[in-house]
Structure formats: C-alpha cells, structure tokens
Image 1 (tube, helix red, strand yellow):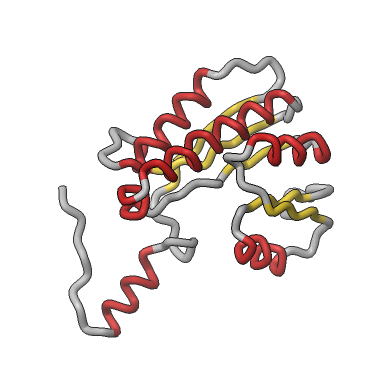
Image 2 (cartoon, rainbow, N blue to C red):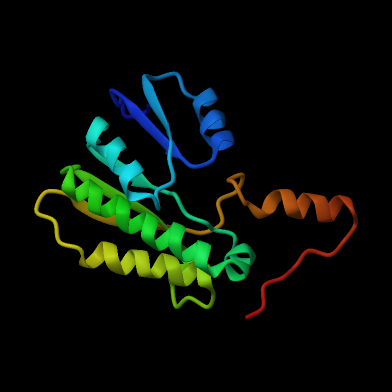
Length: 166
C-alpha cells in the first residue's frame, strides 16, 4: 500500500490469517486460500493473476513444532518454496523475495535447515527475467510466533524467562 501497488494478491493456507490480514487492508485485493505445497493449486493462482512481485513468507517457523514434525516442515518449507520460485519464473514475475530466517545460518534444527535449503535453491535457480533474492529476519516483535506474548505470560505468572543455550 505504501508503494501504491495497484493490486495485492493475498495467499495463505490459514483461513484465519487470510481473514485477519484482509481486515487491515484498504486496497484492491484478491484472496486465495491455497497451500503452496500443492503445485497445481498454486499454479492456478499464478496463471490467473500473473504477479509482478512475489513475496514468499509461507513457512513453518516454530522450531519445536518443526522438530516434532520434520516431514511437514520439509513439505511446507522446501517444496512450497520451490513451487513458488518455479512458478514465479515460469510466469515471469519481475521479482521474487524469499523471507528466510537467522536460523538458516549454520542451522542446528529442522526449521533452520529447511530455510537454508530454500536459500540455496533461490541462489542457484536460473532465471533470465525474474530477480530472485532472500532476506533473513530474526524474531520480529509482535509477529505471529513472537516470543513477546510468551514472555508476558511468564512474567505475569512470576516464572523465569528462558535463556538460549549456546
């Protein structure tokens, strides 16, 4: 909106998240309830919309859940990213931005490893038209999965805050 996009295409596999972000927007938009790991469903969106810029933030990011569900983490994070990059290239999007994580640096867990694989694919896939880039975020205060609500709850309960193990 800040950069005066003509149209925003929202795509999420979470009905609640898609609904929530939609409530915040006041610009022309289309909404798609789609799982990025399902190539044909995702392809229909690219075919219909032909986006100029793709910002790919669809990933499981909770380390313990990914550790407990490595197959789901691989399917969603790696296959979903590959599908999205491949379709951005096929439909000649001008730009593709992969939202990655600081945990992709020398990963020590499944989530970080899946995101590192995505970064490597993004760095090595060939495209003549689509500029592919990746950015790494750390914990973003107030975002989905932010540690802030957990810390507030622990403080309210007068419990100690967890410290990372180095």
